[in-house]
Image (cartoon, rainbow, N blue to C red; front, top):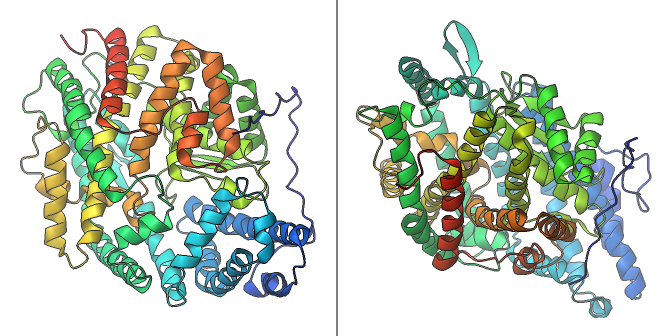
Length: 589
């Protein structure tokens, strides 16, 4: 594995990167409809290839067209999430899904077959193109003509969750608030205020329970049909193949759930029990679990999104000045949409724009400490995009989530060493760090719940809604601490999976959060011991994108791709030690 040298720090005068150069398509070309790109696709299919050099040139031309199409498709997705009520944006996005993709996919399959069967392919560097050829082989094997239209239908339906919930709002204390804004009241020290907010928000979710259940039934049906068409007995096994999960199996995931239950859940229970005991509340209700302790006010690390951006830049400057410059570039280009507003889709993401090479961060900030974590998390993804910009093929820049989430979660923890930028009060800083580390641990059981739920759903394709609710409840019971009293709130609890957009939009994209979280803890452990070496390893991993298999990428970061019981226990002990150093009284007495 070669060493990737990270670009040098930019000067104080930040230069906006140029769009990646075009050699095949005119610099002025833009596409709106299928007819704009069809001639290029057909030319690539029909072009004769007489030697290895011509094959390589042809591959680069294919990739250039992929970049152009990928940039446009992602910008259309961004527009839909920025305003779920924008009908023009929805129509442009839907036209891509229902008109362009169904025409493009069969021809893309022909292009893939042309490459994979080319006699000059053997003359290319096998190690350099290993990941690309492995992806190519899998795509060819999974492709079915009859799935093209089904995939288009599925693409449209998967965005319905954002549309259904994007316009949700509630009234609290005479103000109309988005659900993200209302969630701030769950941190309040006023228990009546917390309870009111909790019930108002969950009642709001119940108003869309039926349409969300109907939508999920339709999604499950389409996904199962796609799997069967491709020769799989269930969608779970198809999706594992489609996601390129070469380094672990469904059985490994289920074993990982067991490890989380035995090694992590007891520590999460200790954390929650200390919180309950410090509050002095009985019974401990679901609106109490995030409550600030007595005499504590909600942390306010920033007031405006401009302040969030500027403080994030200052924080990243301390981690590495080139990271800060990258965020300045995004701000200058208008590639930050950070504040919460009505009709904006929930959640947060980083979209890598493959032709410009400069990513876009979307989130719903309302001024909380959680927003700081989301911003720095998405910044980790953004640094990954910048760092892999130089790689030759799109395949190498489309990072699987096991490595993408490592980049983002490690950034959260490394940047935490510099959070005094956001919290100039030592007590507030300690609270923020404790909250971060407790969330690192509490995330893992939740990941096991979401992943386990999807394993069951898609291996039981004929299940009923009642069976689905029962399975969800059983998983909640298995991975909960048992300290929270849900009496009289069972309807809220059995519908709580509706809030997890991954289940609707990106099925099985979730276990990677747990895998990457372990890796991020290991990166942070390095960072505490040797910041310079840890940062060099991290940057080396970023620069490699997805040009090597996952275990090698984790190795480049100086850690192991490992979720065995012993390894999980070792990392959990490290977090426990760090929490004890920050906590008063100690976590474990």
